[in-house]
Length: 315
Image (cartoon, rainbow, N blue to C red; front, side, top):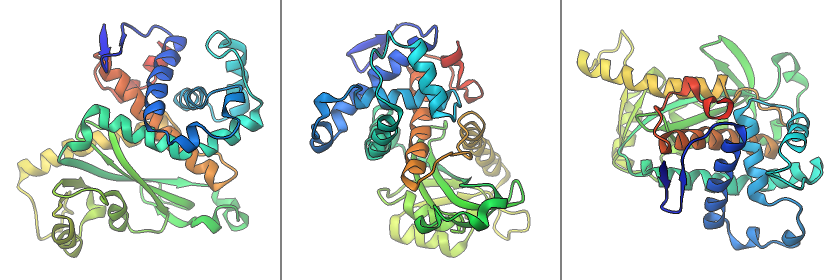
């Protein structure tokens, strides 16, 4: 039995409904704490069929199950989870409320980081993930996201050109994502770091060869007192000792695993959205879902093994 914030306990999670119940309790507790009054007490909120916490919870579990079709997922919930959610609003209202809660979802994610204590740790691993907004063949005719900064970028791992954005992330040494920023796809990896470290000073960053740059390292040191330890290229004049390089590679595998889980388990490279705000909401929901699953795993004493991130859901 695991105590959670001295208010309730998690004994075991045996099935999907157990997971949904635990997720809802955590989300609702944090929602009550971080949501501004003008949102929590907005006009006609008392007449709403579903609470904000219920909507956020349903969205999180849907992302963990990699269900991209909102219609299919809501249909499943209405059929199989009436005991947990007695009433459902129509899909249009559900989707509109979800988009309007994107700022609240972000505040819940930040508070979850505070609950874990990771926000105060002095080390971070930095990485990025490309997020296309459409197939390359349709990019020439795709106009929806261009007015919101979507540009062409290159994905080195797939050797592809894509239209969309780049997700920059900071993670702890054991893979918990503490910060993120979304930039146009053509933004340099090093430029994206500045959006991530706005609230940080005196920490150490570990990154790959995309973050190498003498001038960049000097600026970080002078402006934020931040050290960066990039994995050096083989032809670099400045090489770390072998033991340090091995440690950096070992630590980087942690966030590469996190990035892999976000890509493979949560489909973060496949964000099906018709508007920028829908896109932003889904990205934030996927990141919150990832961290929540991490948090619950830790609470019940399981190894943090992201190759089985869905184990809590599927049993």
